Length: 128
Image 1 (cartoon, rainbow, N blue to C red):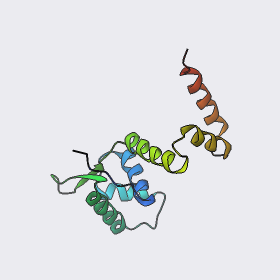
Image 2: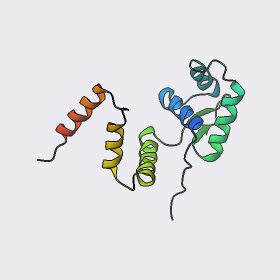
Image 3: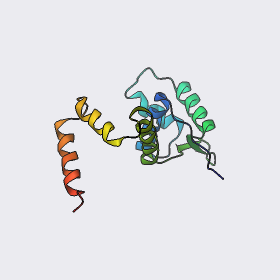
Image 4: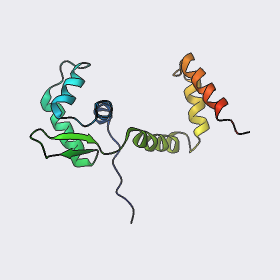
């Protein structure tokens, strides 16, 4: 039996997931406070509603054993990022990881420091 497919998060949901991955399991209030540092106008009710929707979609887990419910990401960050990357490579680059990497390198989205890190990674992982 195939396992259920977790839906692809929207931009707002991905932003909230990044906050949860950084904080770890958190209440709505904790997530709201963390996100307000970048978006001071963000309403608590908006964060609550989004987290409830994400829980319903299977993007978040909810621990209801405490007075304040504690939410956590349903998938680890690396796992979700890998799934999204696989999707992007398949859809936008006809399955070619090389084309994705070359597009990123050519597109000016990679800093000199990141290029050096990529170069070190390639050298350290070169097949002998």
